[in-house]
Structure formats: C-alpha cells, structure tokens
Amino acid sequence: MTTGNCICIHSDVNSMDNVDCTFILNLNVARSGSNRCLFSSSDFFSHSLTLSSPSSSAAKVRACGPKALRGPTSTLPFPFYSGRPRESVSKAHLQIDREVDVVVATHAYGNRSGVRYMTSGLKVYYVPWRPFFNQSTFPTLYGVLPIIRTILIRERITIVHGHQTFSTLSHDALLHSRIMGYKVVFTDHSLHGFGDVGSIHMNKVMQFTLADVSQAICVSHTSKENTVLRSGLAAEKVFVIPNAVDTAMFKPALERPGGSEIVIVVISRLVYRKGADLLVEVIPEVCRLHPNVRFIIGGDGPKRMRLEEMREKHSLFDRVKLLGAVPHAQVRSVLISGHIFLTCSLTEAFCMAILEAASCGLLTVSTRVGGVPEVGIRHNLSVDVWFEDKLSYELQYLTNSTVVVLPDDMIVLAEPDPGDIVLAIQKAISMLPKIDPQAMHNRMWKLYNWHDVAKRTEIVYDRAMKCASQSLSESLSRYFSCGAWAGKLFSLVMILSFLFWHLLELWQPADDIEEVPDVIFSHNCEGEMMQNPNNGNP
Image 1 (cartoon, rainbow, N blue to C red):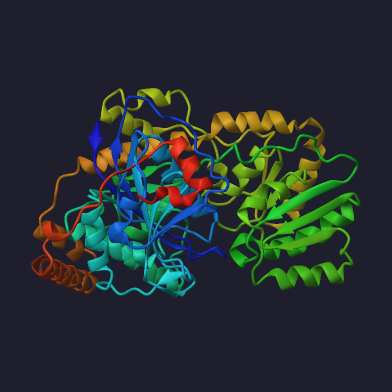
Image 2 (image 1 turned 30 degrees about the vertical axis):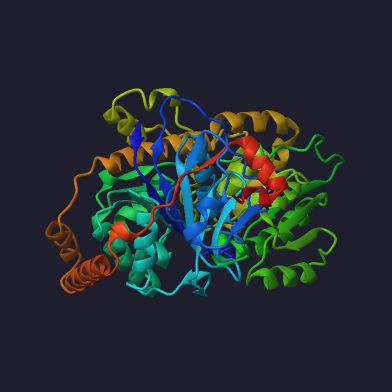
C-alpha cells in the first residue's frame, strides 16, 4: 500500500474548448488488483451534486460503500471538453476505480461555483476565480496561494500534478506547492515552437516552473523531446505515457453505411495549426477525382469562412456538409456516419481523435507530424507485473517501452502537402473493401485502455514520492541557474512566496484548518444519488 495525495492542473488554451484546469488526487493506491474496471466517460458531466459550501461539502454525501474519496483540487473542463481535458478526466475516473481518491479543483464557470460531486464520486472544487482570456485565469503569482494552501491541507495532499503549458493556474499551483514541500508532477500535452515571441516567453516560464519539479510526463516521445528542449528539464525525469481511448463509448455502427457513396469525416478545430488551409485545397481535388465522395466536417474556428468560400466557389454544397461545433457526446454519431477519418494537423503531440475514429471502425488518413507516427502500443510486458516487481523494473518499462505505428491497414500517413494527402485518400479509398469496423474496434480495445494509463501514471507517482525533499537553499540554486537575469528574478519570486507562505502559517496555522472527512461511495449509492440528489443530504 502506497499512501499519498496528488493534485493535477490542466489547461487547454490552444483549443476551441479551452480550459484552465487543476487536478488533485489522493494517492491511496490499493495494489491488490481489486476494482480494475474500465471507466466509461459517457454522460460524465450530466449529473452532479451541488453542495452549499466547501466547508460542509463532505458531510452532505452519504457514506454507503467501501471506497473513500478525498483529495484536493483540479481544474475540471466542464463545460469545455476537448482532447486534453478528456484525457485528464479519464485518468481521474480510472484512478477512482483503482482506489485512488480523486478531487478536482477548477476556476468558476459562470454561476458554477463551490463544491460538487460527479456521478462517480469525483469531487470538484469550483474556486471563485474567474477566467479573463480563453478560459485561463489571470496570472497573479501570489493571489491563489491562500486558496491552494487551504485545499491542500483540507484534503491532505502529498502530490501536486499539473497539466498543460499555458495553464496559469497550473503554474501558480505548482510553484507554491513546491515551496510548501509537496511533490510535484507535470504533464505536457502539446508541441510548442522556439522562434516566435509567445513561444520564447512561455519556454522561459516553463523553465521556471519545471526547475524544481519532481517528475514529468509527456504523451509521446516527440513531445518529450520538445519539452526537454524547451524547459531544460533532465531527460531522465520525463516519462512517456501515451493516451488511450474509451472503446466502450466509441463503438462502430451495427451496420456500415452502404451504397456506393464514400463519406470522409473531419472533426477538428478549424484553425491554422489543425490544417484547415490544407483542407481547403484537398477537398476540391478529391471531389473532382471521385464523384462518389462526400465530406462531413465537424468543428468551428476562424478558418470556417475559408471552407465556406471553397464550397461556394466549387459548387460543393451537396458534397461538403459543415456541422459547426460538435459536442463530445455526439462525436460518435458523426464518426459512424462515415468510412474514412481525415486529419490534416500541422502539429500534434498525440492525436486522440485518431484513436476514437479507429475505435469506431474508420480508416484514418493523417499527416505525418509530431507524435502521430508513434500512435501504437507497448508490448511484451503484462500490466499485472508492474506493481509486483521492483520499481527499477517498472521505470525501465516506462522509459524503454516499445512503440510501434498502428498497422498499415488502420492508418495511412501523408506529408502535410495537399498533393500527398490526396494520394493518401485515394489509397485509403482502395483499402475500404477490406476494412472490418468491428474487427478494428476489437483490436483497439486490446491496444488502448485508460486502465493501462492509470497504472503507468501511478508508477510515476511512486517515483515522485521517492524523490528526496529539497531545502529552500537547494531549491533556490535550481532557480538561480535559469539564467543570468531570469535566475535572479525567479529566485526572488520564490523567496517572496516562501515568506508569504510563512505569513499565512502565522495568520492561520495549519492545525486550525479543518480536514474534510472521508466520503464513501458504492456503485449502488451513486445510482441512488443520481435518481434523487437529495439522498446525499445527511
């Protein structure tokens, strides 16, 4: 049994569904192998229990099962639900199933504030901190310290897990948590550049935030290389844990779309980095070469106008359908209406949309960029031995795991060039008669699952817990080495954070902050609470 608590912070400011998010997990890991059921994320946000105040939230949920849930905060992506938030939420649910107590904290969304419980027992703190741009909170440095400190103490957290480079809440929480002595883990989900002004600025912020991080996680080897180069983090501290897919939610249609018509599905944000400009050139050429091809495009963004102009210019109103933004709950219904899934991204750390499309039985055509060629599975080691063998063996598995590309009969890769993409689509069309959607779904079920991801994440948490505690002087030496001028500035920021923390300790000692009681759920109890939320009242 390993005892510890974890906080995770996530932001998706690069997407249409932007979210600034902080997860906090209470790592009470039962390694006996019980409760290993796979979480299904469908209808996850549709049910929640609204609690009047954080101070009394835990007492309002009836204890009726063997599983205790406790732990501090994370930023939950409700009502925004894109790829990176989906990954974090899926991990959170799987860790609940694995007896890892999970609590989430996020900034307020509209009138959604206070503390709520999701149907699986996932506790969510909606901190009254309003976003000011692209669903990101204003970077105050010290403004969130009192709130973060209170939640960490109330929920008895020991590990703080932050997500995403552009999450200001993540950076603030990680820095303050480290100065208070908590173990810190960071996960990066995206690829970023080096040459533009914004990237140069954020890379320096990354170097500051990760200077004293315990461990880091990336979703692909390409993402790991990018993160190490941008932040200066030691490569041995960074582990690669690819994403997975909820195959229970993304199932193929009972009957494949028939007839001679071929439907190509595109679900993406219509922005430059997602290759919307490539789509404008590819679609007319494919329609010219194949009169029986039709396109369904889901998503919205600044490049939608170019697609509408292209459709009007080439008179393709009957062959190109623009759906606009597609809620995540409806993604499967769009996917199963097609035969081929097309993604033209110019940069991807790890494309979850490809996994979802393959799970629905669609043949994928994708650009060969970033971590897309790494979409594969680790081989030759059983997940059941990871917690039964030595930690060094587990870590060797994480760092040296074999990654293979999806089989050629499941994905066709192309260079990010209109001509090459057209050729790849033609190849995919010729392969369609050999595609069995149900067989493809079954293969994806074996290749990817969140249970695997949750287990591998816990190994990283174990590694973080074994890191030696650092004194203030040792931590300052790491920040001081970040640059001639930046190092001095970073050290000053951390010294002020240290002094502010001790001032808070004098003003409100930790012993005076009430710890939340454990809340116990069972599956039957959750069902009762979904039917009648008032059952949660004492």
